[in-house]
Image (cartoon, rainbow, N blue to C red; front, side):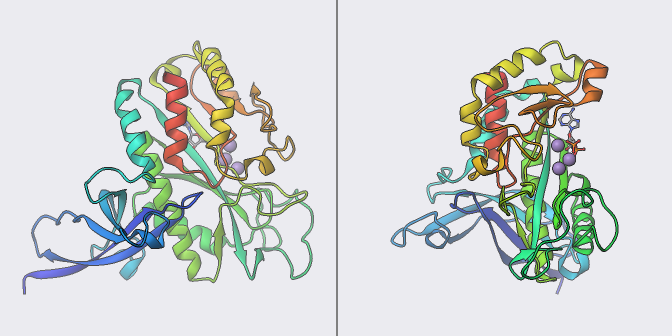
Length: 339
Ligand code: ADP
Ligand code: MN
Ligand code: MN
Ligand code: MN
């Protein structure tokens, strides 16, 4: 038989707040030697994902980007990850389909050359507590864990490294990883790239991390403030630039004033629980204020020192939480900067 069978893992965002990633696998018949088959549309039961009522439960999965599956069969055999938009049976975007809205805005502003880079922080949990936390107690206070090395400072590195390799193998635009301030907390960066690519790759990178965590009995939390008290929260700092910003910082002040004017709308879509994270402590600016500054990690928006030195580059919006919907955040930033 001149045919092989490949596994396509279909990924999509559900209707929860914040959205969770769902996936299910479809076996496809792949003609041997021929060009790879396109992944077909598929469906799922929206009544189990907060996307439909039981009486009218069919939702449509529309493939939008395909990746090589870096996990199944050791990354061999041509298996795929297929990222989808969720649509209604009439073909229109489902109300939870925030990617469709971003696509429209991206199209409107295609000639401005938006680039993004997202720093995804997260916390690893096992047995109901963050990795590195002893049963019924606390580890040493924060200070030595950020970018630390050693079994008393870095918890979960095997998973973190496997995740990095999986992203590289899948051609996800991962840019780096680092240990974070709280034990069990880490970060990876996605970008720099165009808005849809970066948001899509972030979703796939989150899925890969959660999936690989299963192998270790470790779960991944994107909670903005996983632990109360004197422990850092988890953010998704969103770095952005336009072609003009990469030429000169002449327009930076005008952009900062627009971000200030729309501060409340941004806070409203920067992840549920943001008030607990943006307290004004732990390298944040209170959600009640808007402040911009060079090299200021207590600001809402930071201009990196090299950008100030070079007189061009990008800005870092430090407000978004780890649990953001990246499509919503990028859409909001593009509209504020350009409309
Ligand atoms: P931090 O010092 O805040 O921890 P990181 O090194 O973690 O910074 O992340 C910096 C981010 O900035 C990366 O995600 C990168 O993709 C992004 N970035 C760099 N240059 C640009 C640019 N010109 N436009 C948009 N994003 C950029
Ligand atoms: Mn970072
Ligand atoms: Mn960080
Ligand atoms: Mn940052």
